[in-house]
Length: 259
Ligand code: NAD
Image 1 (cartoon, rainbow, N blue to C red):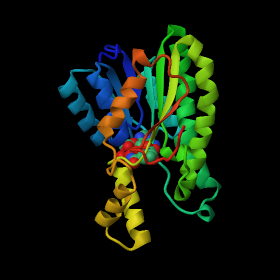
Image 2: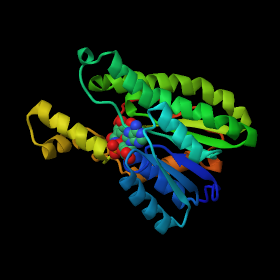
Image 3: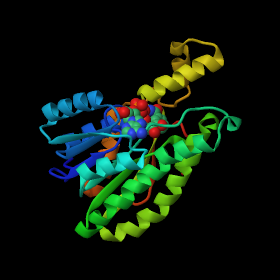
Image 4: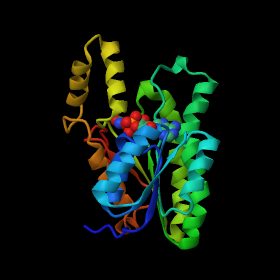
């Protein structure tokens, strides 16, 4: 399917690895030029070079912590008036309810709620002027079914989800389409760190922890970041123009819901 976005420009935040990179790859395959952000320049350079040589698109990199106001400014200076925005950042650490102090919530809110809101606030006015834009926020399956040990993530992502629910409907009349994708467990560094946590909690090795986690997912596997990226690219396509303010689960059936 031709997604109709060849020649558009996309900013992918936290995009040198994992789900962000999966999104960058799928957009590049659709002919989209990229501004790629992450914190470390080496991984960014590797990702950018691979994308340029595989897909022949233009890729600029910006190393910056997207959770900080300074980092957001740095990224926005390079991104300018992009057509597509993919919001992403690392997820907060697991724990239990009594572990977390105000500073821990502030960090989680900065990364997983306030950063995507700041990027939308800065970039969407130009999309509205042009009458076309696409925004995808990477959140988590925990938005639909909270995961107890990810209380910081549950809290911050609930805030972002509430914001998007209203905002997506306010910008849609101007051709700007905003949606969230809710990943279940995907095979990335984040999954490896969650496997480690489970191994410690259950007194087993990491391979056994991974096997147990995969066995609980109806698809019996972790997700592939490339498949996740394809969903993102579709939500950034011309064809997605009637999908507004949705929370799309990509979780191998893990979240047991009818709606
Ligand atoms: P990952 O750790 O594999 O990749 C994270 C990427 O983000 C890296 O490129 C890293 O450099 C970059 N990054 C992290 N924090 C950043 C920051 N503050 N500023 C700029 N770049 C930053 O993570 P992932 O598995 O791809 O997960 C992406 C998001 O999806 C996270 O918020 C995670 O919590 C969430 N999520 C992941 C899964 C999963 O199974 N992988 C499941 C549910 C939710």
